Amino acid sequence: MDWMVLGGYFLILAVTGWIFARREQKNATDYFLGGRKMPVWAVAISIVATSLSAATFIGAPELSYGGDLTYLATNIGMILAALVIAFLFIPRFYQTQSASIYQFLEQRHGIGARRAASISFLIGRVMASGARVFAAAIPLSMVIFGIDRGLEPQTLMLSIAALTVVATCYTLWGGISSVIWSDVLQYVVLIGAALTAIVLIWQTIDAPVSEVIDTLTKPTDQDGVQLGSKLAVFDWSFDLTRSFAIPACLIGYTLLGIGSYGTDQDLAQRMLTCKDAKAGAKSVVMGILLGVPTVAIFLTVGLMLWIAYEHPELTSEPIARISGGDGDNLRVFLEYILTQIPPGVRGLMMAGLFAAGLSSMNSAINAMGAAFVSDLYRPLKPDRDETHYLKIGRVSVVVAGITLGGFACVCIYWKDASEYSLIDFALSVMGLAYAGLVGVFLTAILTKRGNSWSAIAALVAGFVWMLGSQSFILGKFVDLNDTDSILAQYASVHHTWKLTLGVLLSSAVCVVGKKSSLIQSD
Image 1 (spheres, rainbow, N blue to C red):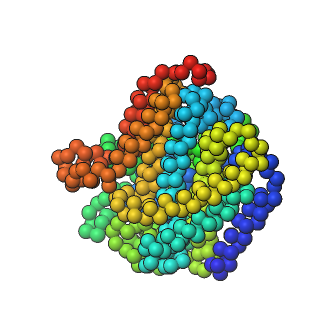
Image 2: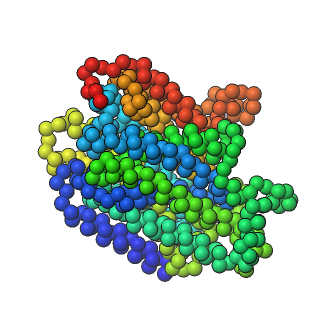
Image 3: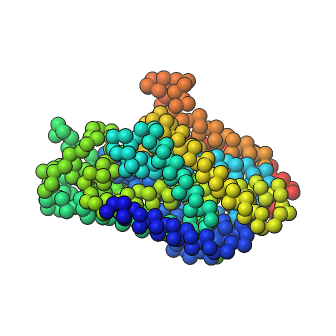
């Protein structure tokens, strides 16, 4: 039954991919922008599906199972970021009429800034999407090889290879249109799987709603010590090491959102597929707002699992964890799917896991192809016909897929060297490129300063700062357990504050440059 459901899911993917492959694509604009004819609602759902990824499918339940609902508060920063992007970024992107958002930087800072930003995006996207592919490979590996072997490096690499092949083939022929419509399909499967899990878990709970809520509000540990409420949404502390404290949500996650939706070709490209700037602005705001209840659903899954596993006295069917133990919450949702969900329904859950992985990978390789063709290849060979650029675009999609798969294998060992949760790990890797990109874009939009050389220097400074802020780098220079060391204290600071400092640094470097008289003015 499980394989029949999975087979039906992949059959639908194959049919939709074939339909889009049959559509005539005359040029690179059709391939990378869908002819600017995509409906706002579909683009909004695609934005949500891509931004969630498998890290949310298994990472959000991990957070609420072991903690509370404070991850929801990060949406404060994301909503603020959406408003900035809708009013400041999107109108300027549409003015360039390019498949790449980095065309805008050429108008403000020169061709060197455009190329450097595109290269920075490509490097950063390999890292960020590679981390997401790694996250997606975890459930796939556990489904295929079992709970015990699912996290072994060898089995994870095989799963990464499988995801890479499927996502690359699907994206290769259909372009951005197939990516967006497949995201809509995969979002429905993703949410359907999570809601089904909530219903099934709730059916095993044999206690009044008031008692369940009271247990979540006043949880205790094994020794009976009172813990913080698992229903807490806001963390009002000013502790710079806390992942989802309100100051970090207001500042750090706003900058992270600007980086994700405004300076990253992967997500910004979707907004450019709408008919005009107004429609593109609506799509990003709708997408981020839709993400709030979506994340809440997956956090609810974690809370329900906590009741089922940690408070068997409230259930009619007590169950015990196989992998059990503190700090091993990453497997909790996957374990429940593989051991407690009935056949057939379990196939739907597996389809949801695969949907989460594919939705983030196919969009990334398409965006990388668009950036390469528009920013790097076309300027070097400007006199070729559109058919030639379309062929190069497809070749670049294949290369991007292989590269992402390779870096995902690196992430297997990188994650082990960090102390972050799966979601925090994925977000921290994304920040490597965002520090410089956000600084350069904000300088271009808000000031009249900057040129090619200062923009390039800013991108390098931001990347070096974020890379040097990684714990495994700092650990080579100082004992991270030395509480008296400033570097050791900085290593424990949450990655959004490191990103904030990186944006300030890159902005300061970029504004040093004077605007060239040859650059087009606004």
